[in-house]
Length: 501
Image 1 (cartoon, rainbow, N blue to C red):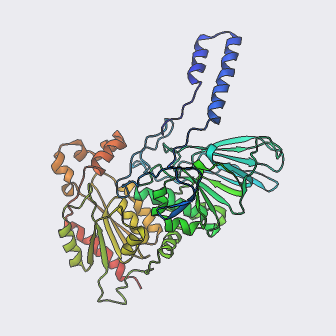
Image 2: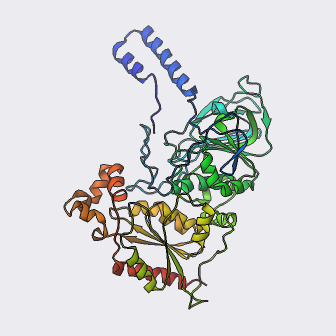
Image 3: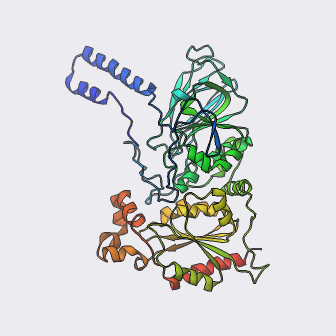
């Protein structure tokens, strides 16, 4: 994304075509080498939201140096996932799983460097994320966005460029240079200003954060997987820091780390650690793959939702049991989006759900609502119903054994819908039900007419690229549910709750 310049390619091809003498070719090769190496060592200016040193920002204390102003909190939590510009050699355009491909898992292996207790494992070949894990003498220089590994014995000099956001193709997130020096006496080793006893995790905000689903899928879940094993005794070094974001998710961040987050881009001190993780690893969308949990600490998505229940003191760890309380009505929360992908017949859906045996709450998400308030409201329900969108992320607060009903808009979006919510919901220990909108239930039919390609041939629209898929099926569509056709889905949800003990 935001393509990185690769200087020297034009010079090289020109030399191959027009220069025939060995001297000229040799000169140009030397020049090319210089340009490429200089580009690899260049550090771009950090795209940071600056903060004022050691002060409370939205209740989150951030350890930082220098003066600053606060960025306004973005009002995007309930927006559809934003498409992100890609780097020329990458193929991820939206931050979402491509609709024509199977969901990707970042399980590529990296070859470690290991000697005399030192260990460096950098993975830059995974399909989604790039990370480094370093054990030994590790030194960070935040203002230079660099990490230096000083080996305890002579070794090969190596260097990696890591984007510490969980999606390696994300524009607007600067890369961190990780360098392994040749020896303990290497003069390039910066002297330690602060030596820490605890490990650290270095990661970046920005990117697609500000969208509620991406907040969890891109940052909170991977951060939990990376840091939970430390029991709070871990320091977070945050590049491109967003004070409002740390304020919104303060309770979660505070339970993962008992220390103030460091504003890395404005941190002029060289900090030294014995263990550092650079970057967050996205296992798969909004979920955790137990086998990929670091340090042999096997974690699951059910562990993450249990962690959230503890964090927000949520009272319910199981849905209503109709077997034990046959006269009690289970509670269903219907999420009504503020714009596009709205339900056009909420009263009819509500009436049908009540006729099926549910007590129904209609919730219109508020971006400014405290997260604890949202968590408690969702946890008091047994079923979450909504059209595909960020609001379904609130499934993380449902009691295990509850039900999520995802209404998939018209347009062959089932693969994406299952990757974004279907599989994660199952991993949380919830029952997942899916209702696919027929063309007659979509506002696109009246808007475009039955002969429009968006109506007649959704597969062709998908082949044309993500932009048209997002424009029509996600950005211009509302749904009017056929309550008769929807009734069996409601019955399935009720049958599941009848089986709970």
